[in-house]
Image (cartoon, rainbow, N blue to C red):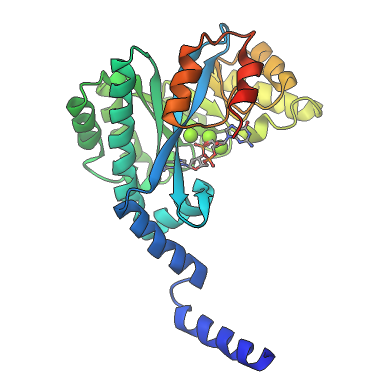
Length: 291
Ligand code: C2E
Ligand code: MG
Ligand code: MG
Ligand code: MG
């Protein structure tokens, strides 16, 4: 009845007041378990070379294969992992698993880069570069095959420390990418000081390219800014032929988005990549691999 439910709700909130909503606490407990039980997976989304339409590599995106909830999106568990510090062991697992995957693809004759996402907490770990180096060494992977994506916002949290870490990674030969570029309000001087190889234009600039003249102007300015800084430009979240055409016109070097393919398992990506992927076959393939 209503009174009992009210009472229960009160007790519920009271017990967890200091730790956040109860569903988050339960989710955190399950996420800890998931790390132990190896329920996390990396899915891969192709990055397409704009001039040729060929796949150059793939971005590794975390998936939580939950026994009862199904596939849990990183948008719902990465923030929790960041707040709880669990992102550190998770991030280490990502580094290890992506390196292992690079080795598998290399042994299969598939020459592809992998981009991993690094969180702001990982950037503050003094042993980050050593861990990456050691994973690459273990699997005998050329560091140039690994890209680290860091969001513009997290690159601004502790500017000096970030520049140092990124310089170290860069010196190792690892490629660096500034993710969600254009959303972080960082200064041009700072952007110029980051040893980034590529800037990844945020999806929000791609969204209404076809319908909104102002959006088009802003997107073009962001692309031109990236090019003026002499960085490669990647556009993320490309969903339509119209966006594709406009972004190519703007001079984007690489494109990524559902138009080409959604993130997929490593096995599915290997098939996708070895089948000769050219501009003609792209839409066809995008429709096969929709999940
Ligand atoms: P992100 O790095 O900016 O990744 C791009 C996100 O956009 C991915 O969402 C991808 O599936 C989605 N996406 C790609 N193409 C399209 C498209 O055409 N349309 C739409 N609507 N979405 C598209 P996802 O996989 O849910 O990941 C969300 C975010 O979670 C990532 O954003 C990244 O910040 C974070 N994340 C994912 N994996 C990791 C990881 O291993 N470590 C860390 N620290 N963060 C991760
Ligand atoms: Mg990313
Ligand atoms: Mg992004
Ligand atoms: Mg984004």
